[in-house]
Length: 166
View 1: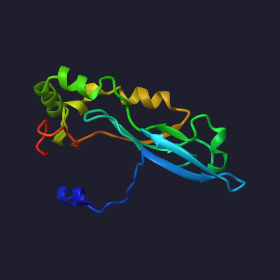
View 2: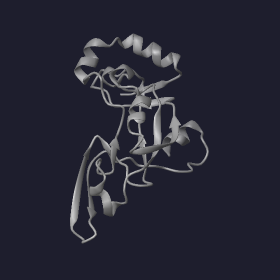
View 3: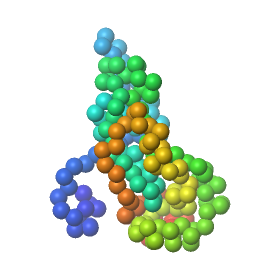
């Protein structure tokens, strides 16, 4: 809400939280608890809405889960989960050592992305192509909407930000 106010955008019509590093408790039909631990994964149960981000410069997606209802979660091979993001092709240290800071800044500017925080470890070239990742999950989620980054705020190693923020 603060960002929309700062940008002078009208009322927020919807919000969506995306849990991706957590343990989720559900109950089987007999009432026995089941704990699903999702590390880097997002819920994708039937009709559950989620967000699968891209990178600083590649699209992210609002998705709707195609999995089973919670009572049948064990029948779905993914345990009603989908990848939370594009996934890395470069580790954080490798990205910092190999990517060129000025080249990343130029690329972001050319694509119209305002970066207010984020380091080379989060640069677009450190990630897989988000459209390919979504295509590989077409049996887990349905794309509801696609969004292109225009203002990006990510955490950067101390003193290593590419953007205006910290």
